[in-house]
Length: 211
Ligand code: SF4
Image 1: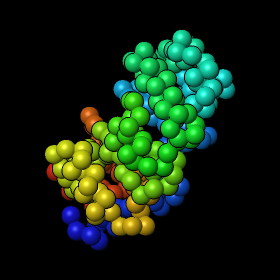
Image 2 (image 1 turned 180 degrees about the vertical axis):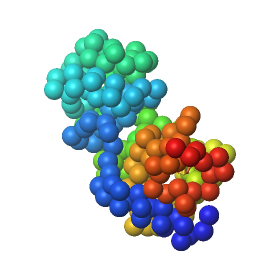
Image 3 (image 1 turned 135 degrees about the vertical axis):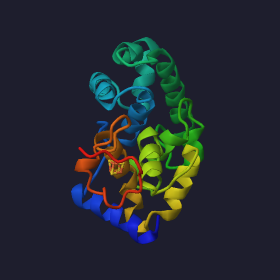
Image 4 (image 1 turned 90 degrees about the vertical axis):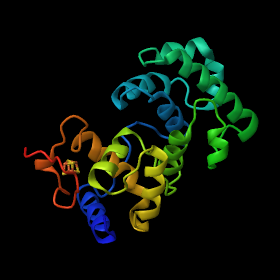
């Protein structure tokens, strides 16, 4: 795919949704960190239901430590893998309090050192909470990047590196959201909605659907 096409794709996605953001509900970097940690193998809707119970009770590392493991589990028990997630969140809260003054660090290495936080979660936090031009490649972005030809790659890391390299600077900060939302609602896994797709003529996918 050439540079002009890439630019046009992002221009159209921006025109359709000028201020994209995550569908996870949060009001601070810490709330976002917790929400993203909970979102592994869970839907955003499910995570929001749990955090609506949790955040009014505890929305800082110290408050979650004070709530205790059982209290935390009680709030998030509707989410898959909640036992392991609760334990990771408790450990992460302890590290945030002891090493970072109770704040979420704006630093990839420090983020990835937290239990339960991998490259993808760190990217989401850096991008969405701090406005850094990172792209967290999840299953939706991986699919859209490969189908369209925007950034084909065999691994999520390869796709991430290509997207960072080839996405025009002005779109980098929001590219993550545009591509996720496009993958979630239009370029769906089982049956992409090519008939309603605003980038259909630019997309290089060979098996486009008609409807
Ligand atoms: S045309 Fe189809 S395959 Fe291409 S991006 Fe749009 S929905 Fe996805």
